[in-house]
Amino acid sequence: MTTPIEQRFLDQHPGSAHRHETARSLFPNGVTHDARKQNPFQLYYTHAEGPAKYDVDGNRLLDFFPGHGALILGHSHPDVVKAVQDQMAAGTHFSGSTDLEMRWGELVRELIPSAEKVRFHSSGTEADMMAIRMARAYTGKTKVIKFDDHFHGWSDYLSAGGEGIGGIPAETLSTMIVLPPNDIETFEQKLKEDDDIAAVILEPTGAHMGANPILPTFLEQLREVTERYGVVLIFDEVVTGFRVSKGGAQSYFGITPDMTTLAKILGGGLPGGAVTGKADIINMIEDHPGDAEYNRYRRIAHNGTFNANPLSAAAGIKCLELVANTPVNDTADARALQLKNGLNDLLSKMEIPGCATGISSLMFLRLGADHECDKEYCILTPEHAAQAGNAVRNQQLNLALLNHGVHSGNRFILTASHTEEDIDFTVDAFEKALTEVRDQGLV
Image 1 (cartoon, rainbow, N blue to C red):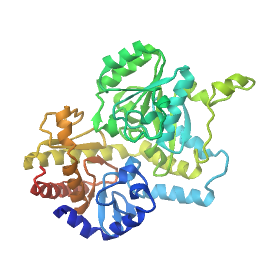
Image 2: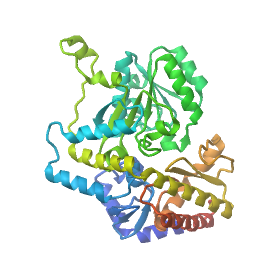
Image 3: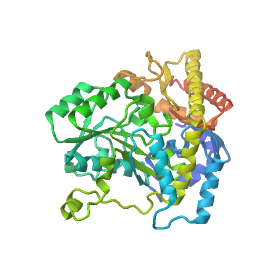
Image 4: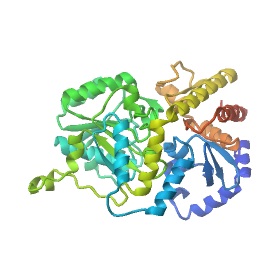
């Protein structure tokens, strides 16, 4: 039976509904990214500017999932647009090196504390794949530790412990060790038991951008233990790089890993990824003239048609220059704090259990869980997590918010383009949406 929220969604988005029917014959589930799958159908967009995007039916939506986290400047920032247009006219691909790639790499090294050398890729998945391979080649060891529910792209190795692992050989998965986060005793015990561990990789703010947080104390412990055992510490800062602070989560927490992976903001809205860190590790790509044995069996060969391509480099340079020299992060953080406070006040006023939580410009809404937390590092019990993860309620809330002009659901990624008025509008939209969800008996 169609709910009132679903009926309004159907009425407001006929163009997207029609396109979804066509897309189902073209793409699995009718989408080109798992996270875009939505019932009864995903929306189709035509253009975007600043904090908002517009769908094919003419609806304006405030965007709190901008570019999957890539757009800290907001959509279509004029300086980035001009940089890309100018480079497009000059050339898109030279099959060779450019000054652009050097400037891009210099900015990474200036901003990211762990960066001694840099290697560019086209995505975060590629960067994570390269990082663990570099760590294995550098240490001569085989296994890599990751943590429950931490996301590092879709590669065979780093999909371990997740869903959708069809087609991955058991032999590949056997080289991965998946442990619970925030448990240094279990982590160190594993290192004591197994001397074939090359590296540990994690999202430094916690699984799924920090929805399930990592405690800062655990990061400190992890750094100390990995140094003591000679295990490479890799921060996956694909999302948090240049966002949690100009220098990423490692700068925010004051903990420098051995290696860092980057993407999203790095490319200024175009495809781009990088692995950076200690020069000795990144240099596993360098060949050793005259040492055929090393070059064949130790060195890492790495190609990639669009590595550091001029368009991505131009966009990335302009974006990182703005991050470095203007209050981009401070503005996004301020809007996130305004939204977090506004939603927590709203939950209190409406007597709905839950919280809005998070750090910097990353924020999460936990509905239905009656608990206490500091509104920054909210770690729920399994029972409370199940309450917050109620799929029926959250799906209805997401549709209701889209009906009221907000694309967020339970996760928010803020940009420097969101205004105070945008946040006020969003809190008001949540009040309307939560009222409608309550009318269905779901909160």
